[in-house]
Amino acid sequence: MSGDTPSSAPFDRPRIGVGVVVWSDDRVLLIQRGKSPGKGEWSLPGGSQELGETLFEAAAREVLEETGLTVRPAAILTAVDNIVRDPDGAIAYHYTIIDVLAELVGGEVTPGDDAQDARWANLAEMKQLVAWPQTREVIERSRLDRAQKLAAPVQGAAESL
Image (cartoon, rainbow, N blue to C red; front, side):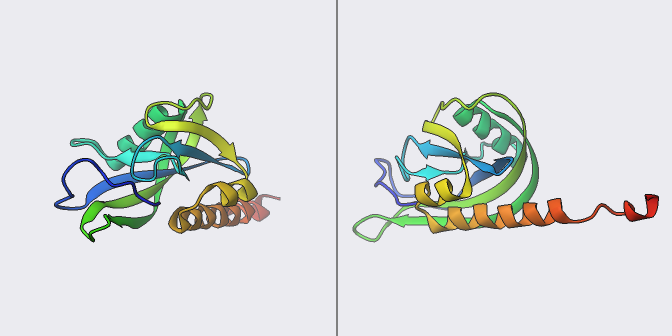
């Protein structure tokens, strides 16, 4: 995620962010960011965790606000750091982003809040849209993990035949 220089003072400590991976069949949910950092870039829905809010509550809220979809967070996938420096080398942004896998509950994709756009994308489309390598890696890792779980035989299924 590239960064636009913020108008406020530099960060004095990292902030916790959440990114949410939501699948519908072979398509992943993406948003086009509506504000810095990374304004205009395609990414996972997500944002800052609020005081008094659990990580999973933040994940569900951010997806609803940015896409209109209701999701049920299911697991923590990984964490990545997004550290952006201004032209003078000072820290402009520092987020530790915890990526969460969530199950789609319902709704229709409608961009809202901080998203310029929102859409489902297959893997080829995702690779063309998403510029930040860490986001592509998280999505790919999630896809492979999901495929492995879907292909795994159900425990006890052979015994019941």
